[in-house]
Image (cartoon, rainbow, N blue to C red; front, side, top):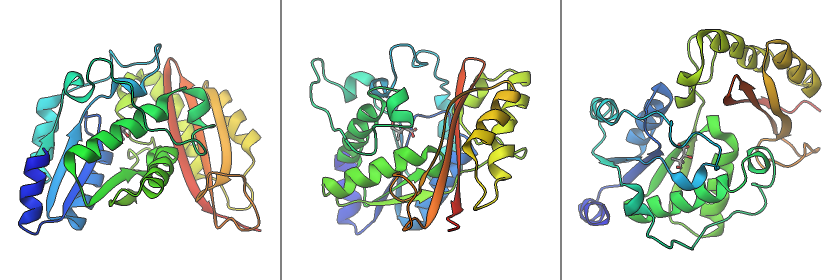
Length: 265
Ligand code: PAF
């Protein structure tokens, strides 16, 4: 992968990457379309990264469809798919980690111990393999996007990070590879999350009402947080925009969603 990227760069090309775990949906494709606007040579990485899954999470059943992913990448003008095996990525006795220590302590970070350590480590390794000039991540994983931006700043990666908007199904459900786990009934009830988030009025966001609405729809709320969208810290007088972030279980499936709203003082 490095040889390929070096060759393209020598020819003057700007290299863009979209890191994914595969099972691509329209959300991923929107990231690919975005990076194609920003780069001349587009790489998509497909790697279901074991180190970001907890021991009781869905690593083994995480959906995979490599053939279909390849077709979609081809249809969207991807130049290279980098799809290493777990053995390619992690040597036996792997013992070096990249950790971000401020933004990962709560929200998904406190509920999924070591998740972000796995993400920052694998994204570093993928960046080292692909050597991109620009990388696009989705706003769906709002905390992940902030953590990656911070890591890139703090560790001086010479890579531009672009965050592209969250993409929803026609009925509002935030697109996710995990949506396929939902039964038709769970999926219908899970629409409460987006219905509530998309119905919020700036200046009138009440986390308790969001929590109650999701619970009434049959969801088990993991968290509802209202934060400064730039820093993930508490909302202050300086906050420009607020992030309203939700994680909730419908059946065994944990879904996340968020909206960003102007901060009304
Ligand atoms: O967002 C994802 O799919 C993953 O967390 C990422 C960034 C590809 C790292 O494994």
